[in-house]
Image (cartoon, rainbow over the protein chains, first blue to last red):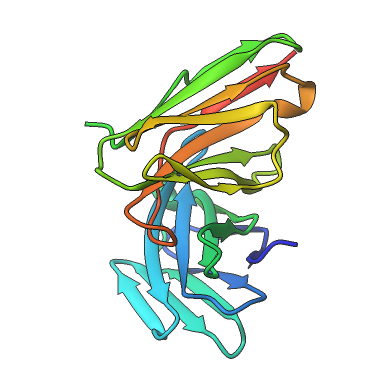
Length: 110
Length: 112
């Protein structure tokens, strides 16, 4: 079964609002990563958070990690139309590979 | 300069044919990967190579054969293509296993 599962599967908000996506996983991890995929394109790395970190920021992005609950969240503040994309979490559980969730499709309405 | 490039971008072919997809990275990374993304956007790892050595082979039919001539290249050859092989195939690279991965633009394979 998959390691990471994103919630919600789809999210539609108005431009300027904040978007929050969640990721849950099953086993201990070394790190958790978030990626963005625009339609018809490859994945682009956003943020990597290690198991001993609780929060990380990058511009309008904020990622939290709760290892006790085996969950992470990605917050995008002041959303823009260009943020419309699918967002994936991926976990490094020490098996020499990343395991990706099925993604959250985010739509920002102008 | 493109960091991870793949060719071709689109591939339409008949069932039973053999085809290859090429991948090159100019990031100096040691590890390269092939992923398959299905119509539901689920991304599943197929193979991983580290310094030209195969380290992951994820229960992929042996019709799929990766080849790494050097650590900057990882090609994927597919024999006897089947309808279920239709998907987007992504190449990626990382400095080391488990770290940030850089993805190519994808190859959209359609088997008719």
